[in-house]
Image (cartoon, rainbow, N blue to C red):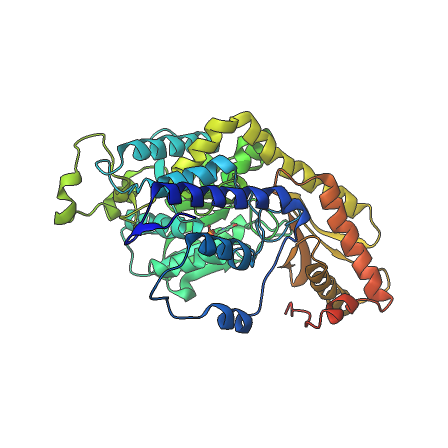
Length: 490
Ligand SMILES: *Cc1c(COP(=O)(O)O)cnc(C)c1O
């Protein structure tokens, strides 16, 4: 391996050779992914001993550093792009997207202003406009890329608060299925915890409009001012979609900002089925949507759309002397004027690059696959006397549990905790859980286009088999053999 050039520089040969090595390692990883475990991790004590050292005064060969990252550090992680990873919200980034991130990084693009990044700025505006059309938002709607839906919600709620005249006692309304990041964002923009209204959802895990209307009326009478209602377009637990059109009617009539959390579910809108499921989403005042979930992009690729871009620019476009040269005149938007971040990476470029490479037809098929496999999993669960469907397939999620005929609720709960832990240690697939109306639910989220029906069926078969093992007293043998404790699911 050629030596480094001097302080913080490398020779062109060393640059090429090290980059080629990285490509080889990454393509090897992709080629062997299906045969690898979907998760790996290590205990904190072990890793602190291994890695918690002072920075070296003198460097070493870059090849060594690359090998160490590839073999000792990066594999100790969930493989969210594994075809049998069904936990949380998986993602399987396309290769052109990864290359776009690499190119943007190596080209040192600071995508804050038109002056510093006109090319990437135009791409961001274009991609935002694609997403606007997919979601059916009106012309004039726009936004920006941010780290993820957490950041998007903070921006949206700042806009909502300011449009609403920054009331002294602001309140936010949402169902109990809403992601915790929304409450966090609400708190960050000045909504007190006790004014974050979490309304019990209905049997379908959807927001109850009557409860919403009653709560808003009671609050207004008490001098508390609604700044926003948050609707779910695909909850993280079950994929449930709130009654978006009815909520838009209500919010319009009441003059309340409607934010839609479409972080997970939003990109279903590129398919016919998804468009129907998300009907009404385009009427929202703001929408957060994560391309690093169901649109096959590497982290971080969150996106915020608002109905009227000026609602972001009014609070966020502040000037500073040191960037006074970056004003290009009319129709040259500085994306930094729409949000919190000044220095920004070119996040939209990866989405653009991957859509250019594969085309929308391929993306539509890839999203559809998750929808279809979730429905098929639902049928398989319904037909198995050992399994109980806890929530039907919505978007690409299905929730269920093991339920042998002769057990009471406590015993079923305990059994499902054991099954979940046993799946975890079995290491052939990864699933995670949620809680539905107080009940532990096993949950599959299927978003990887490389996932086959055999993968999904295999996960369900494994659950049934491990439950039977527990019933006959063989359960946990594997975990015990490893000398590791079964992780607590409490
Ligand atoms: C992932 C997720 C979030 C949080 O988004 P980040 O990108 O992690 O900030 C919020 N809501 C839903 C429904 C999600 O799935």
